Length: 79
Image (cartoon, rainbow, N blue to C red):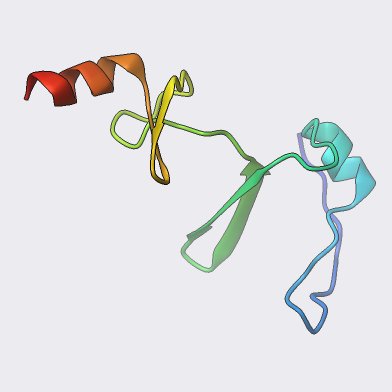
C-alpha cells in the first residue's frame, strides 16, 4: 500500500491525518495511534497496546502505565 499526502503542522503541533490514509489503516475517531522515529522519518501507525516485555498484542493486565500479557506476568511472579 502506498498513499501519500502533504500536511502542515499547526502552532500547537497537530497534524491532520487525511481521510484516505485513516481509511486505509482502519483508523476511526478516538482510536490510538503509535508514532516513532526511524532515522529522520516519522512513522505513524495504528496504535496497539503491546506487552512491555515481549511485544505481544494479547494484553490482559496493566500495572501503572505498563501493559503485560499472561505469560510475562507469570514469569515476573515466578522470578
